[in-house]
Image (cartoon, rainbow, N blue to C red):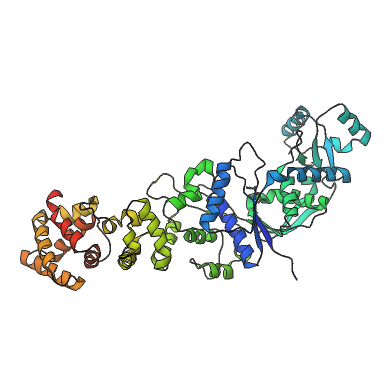
Length: 494
Ligand code: GLU
């Protein structure tokens, strides 16, 4: 029987969950689910100055909203600091690590010399050569020290197979004896991360490509600790159009998961979009259900080249990557109405447009209306913004400037005609789309104007909008009473 798949998402809570982190979480989650494995959540909060409880909560909320369920955790790295120290002590005891008493000033001076000689600075292992007696002496004199790992000397290299980047070779001579415990006794991240992964029996480390540089050092740590190596799978990064890494500092809220939640995204649409960043499937398919993703996803399709996320912070209308918006629109348009319903309800509630009858006596009407208007929408927020004429009794709407110009300004007589049309609609026995259409065409003929003048005028007055579903369907959906009231309001429009 093969070993259990155990993967982890290990965010440092120094910022909110952003789309890069979410993508890493999603890929770990998919891999776990594909392999009947476990997803462990570990909050790497050892940077106590920069980690905040607010960010931790943000990460938990973000994962929950995306629908990513973790099987274990959250574990907090700070709860295991003692273990990290014990591991460092074991490395010292076994001779795999040593105490280094070099002062900052001494190291700085050596760094300067290397710089002057145009060489890369690497710690020269001065303290690795100290005898046990010398070490004891310095310690007894109270000299502070860091703990460094002994990297093998001479020829040879760390060689490993990354599931995405293939065989990676890093020569020992290019790795310095790196610090694993600071002078203040604090274990370093490289060590803590390995100790935690080993304890949690992580079988696959799936993380951003920015972790690739650490991997050779971490492999040396696994070996020195006598722990089994996980499989490493590094994921290409997500960059902005200027090729900068996606980050809170550069992009602010525009890359935060909560921004998408608050701006009308469906969680699965975002998951689907994020999986496609940096992953190619043979058929170049774009839309995947959860089951289809489980079937299709593999590291083999992960691109090594970084992907671009088209965040555009200069255009408030264009809130994010158009591909993400189109993916969202696709799901709004095609998902089962009953699945969409709670999301629309939540938007209407937020906007004060929800009525309990939409879940009761008018439930059927509500579903039909959602079905009618969703075809053109991109964001859930559109249901409250552009859907307002359908869900609100308001008589007068703010009129889109283009609609006013094209449909009202050219026909000032509409202010007389539309109230007359309202009278006729009131009299209409059969308030059906076909009958309404007939009525409007006859009315236009009598006035000797094109039917379009009346039809577009009605659309503009009852919705404020230039475009939308077919007018006769709009009229039956909004209903006789509200339509006639709005048509009679026309004198106030000009
Ligand atoms: N805490 C690290 C980060 O947020 C995770 C590194 C890893 O996954 O090993 O970048």
